[in-house]
Amino acid sequence: MTRCDLSLGFVGLGALGLPMAINLHRAGLRLRVHTRSRKAETRPELEGATRCSSPAEASAGVDALVLCVSDDAAVEEVLFGPHGAASQLTTGSVVLDCSTIAPATAERCAERLMRQNIHYLDAPVTGGTEGAKRGSLTVLVGGANEPLERVRPILEVIGSSIHHFGSVGRGQQVKAVNQVLVAGSYAAVAEAVALGQRLDLPMPLVVDALKNGAAGSWALEHRSTAMLEGTYPLGFRLSLHRKDLGIALVTARAVELDLPVTTLVEQLELDLINGGHGDEDVSALHRWNPAMGES
Image 1: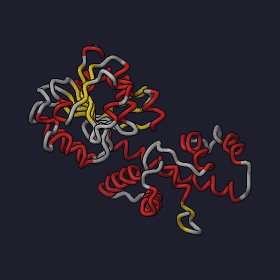
Image 2 (image 1 turned 120 degrees about the vertical axis):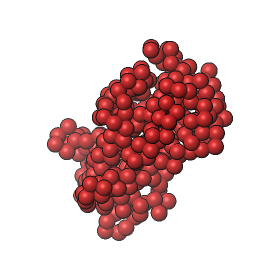
Image 3 (image 1 turned 180 degrees about the vertical axis):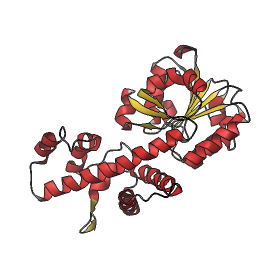
Image 4 (image 1 turned 90 degrees about the vertical axis):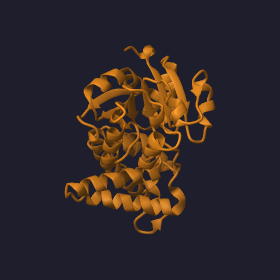
């Protein structure tokens, strides 16, 4: 099946979902869209897509349904709640879930959908809003190979790097590993920036000198400027990253593994969220001062 042959539903037009849906629309897919607030459905970049009042309506007659929503409860509500997608999805269709949720939730959703002969792939993404806009996200897939190949034309629009790790839930496990890495790198950049500022170093020059050496990272490259300026425009919401760290810590405990650095970063994020910063980018970790508490 070619890209233009596919009819597609898309639920969840947030910071990542909206640019993903726009890219799919520009690529010529027949698109039905729904988001809880309904506002993003009216964006001019989605003109010509069918605006739908519910996940069920967005799922009517489609070959595949893409989900990009906030958490486990939202995924289950979209699929199985009142006016949920499962009531309208047809036999043989594919749910491509790009949300970040617990591996066990992905497995449970797959089992319920398979009773209707509907395929489910967990396909969380990484690469930030920048990657979503460029269509260069990394996609981490768990699920059967045959439905994956059917929706690969969709994945090739939203991502430049697609990786298949086996059965349903494995994509979410890899995403948990990713979020542990993100936690450590953001926290390290935040502390390094704070030290450089306290030493009154010319930090833009310092970052430029270090970003291509052993200390280089995505966080240093893309988020150090925000930290230096003390502004945290939304790339990935702090509250959502804390949710993801909770998933990673539960996943680690299930295999009797302690993650002390991740546990610490989760607590720093909780402090910031309690201080009213949950809707800022993860780079707001720079606000936290271990000597003085939250700034």
